[in-house]
Length: 443
Image (cartoon, rainbow, N blue to C red; front, side):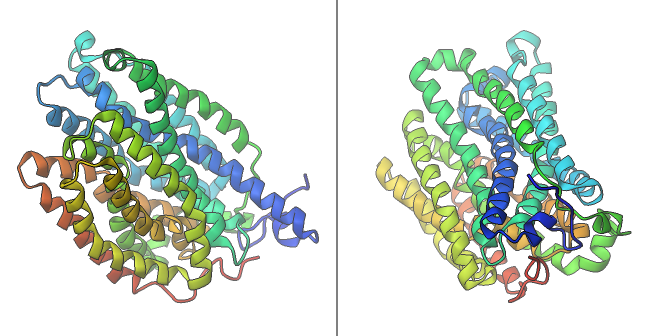
């Protein structure tokens, strides 16, 4: 492979100056695949906790009330999100000052370690209150890792994507993010066929965490082949990776990204990770049926991301975000209410897919619409920190809020909460520029 140097725009020279268009495209696609492989593993490790919680909750939070058990595990899940702002800041700083590649290598190693420790944790019956405490520590560690993963990967993939097709290529970040969720669900489904429910609750839930740790080693090897996109000039900039510099020169962009990410992450987690529990706990579908429904929904959701990303290349990111906010605000309450009143898994699947199609207007361009708001010297920090803060406050607490309101007998209030946040998305998206300030003119 050709030697790679960086340009001031944050693009590798081999990508921007190659005379062979086909080779240039191959280099970019390989870089995107290598970067996204680690993204897939990171999110598999993070989400497998949510999907396996139905089985391991009694091992760490013994209680006669299933909702109380899920509430406790959801609380630990949310705690992992609280580490994301720290991770977004730490890894954003590393990526902007030392390079995107180094940041992505460190984050995948940290996620691997967290999953391996969870797989070997003793239960409440063995060590008492230390069990949930150690589980919490592991989730905080993983939350730190994932907090840095999103911003750096989104930045890297946006920088290597082909001009004019950045929406399409950047959509593969959520293809692998959703793919991580899908693989987590698939592993649970396979285990449900191979093991009995008592076996899953006793020890089978540990298997997905072991698999995640092993897969992270493969991702690490692939990420070592990546070439750096951050230029030496951008690294040396006095504002590189600086929160003070970010807020001093790009405050409006930061709060714009924070605003639409808050609603986007909330509705995303509502119709993905929380939805399986909603189907079991509220719709009263059997656990296995709920797993089948979510597996099929996530697979189609994953496949349609590139189509929505390509749509943004044609009609613009701003229009896609406005459509997302509008449709989400109007449709969220009717969809969740209809799900609440159905017992048919096919009907549930159709309703979930309508919601996920709306969410795709955002998730397909989530990385690129943020990256286009910041220059290279603070791009990873701006993307990662804004995303992490919004996720910690809204995405990570989605399950906890939903289950908490359900336990109080006001489950429908959650529907209106999600819908209200989609109104916020629409209003904030009005601030998006019709023509991106950055990346648009890069090769």
